[in-house]
Image (cartoon, rainbow, N blue to C red; front, side, top):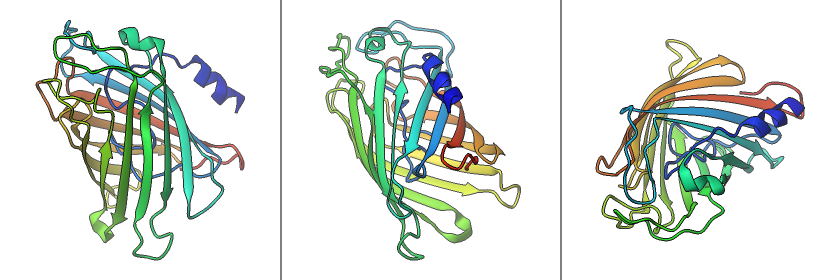
Length: 273
């Protein structure tokens, strides 16, 4: 446990700037209905590489587009119940100009696992993420917005496994209308959440595929698709592509992403999935 805390204290090489990088348990890009079990600590380290490798200076609140994005987050399950679960976490986000002065973003999620009240009962979750610590003003095109990190995205989601077809998720989110805007500075703070995912047992129980969609024309709207390989009972790595819905947004590009996830069960001392 001391080693985990030390690693977190040293992990300050993380990025922000309007993207969905302060994350609870997710599929690839958007939140999932999965929740960390009680006492299980989750450490995630994500790398995002833009499809264009050159910085450009732009107007608006975002500033210059980065070449590479890194994010390290920490989440833990805090309710000792089987049928109602709660996780809380935070991300330290840095490396993007004036936003670095307010680097902490929080997240939390409450949910019921699939099958908790019968075979046909879906997984349900409600939560929030990118809960920043600094209130900001409107982000308008070719203007400098007041510094703000309070994207404050709230969401509700349901998921159900349908036999060999995989698990299907549907939900809805809404965030801060002052900061979630399109290329014209118009508020676009809400949208649908969709995902299909499946463990490819025919090939290997370690292989997982997903297509993850988050609606909207702000910098959060994206279609993501990729695969994961579980290389240990408590560790996996995702390789994916994030295709932004709105190609007209300044300082926002599509991304290649690699995401490493590791769990630690601090109560039993056993490693969990």
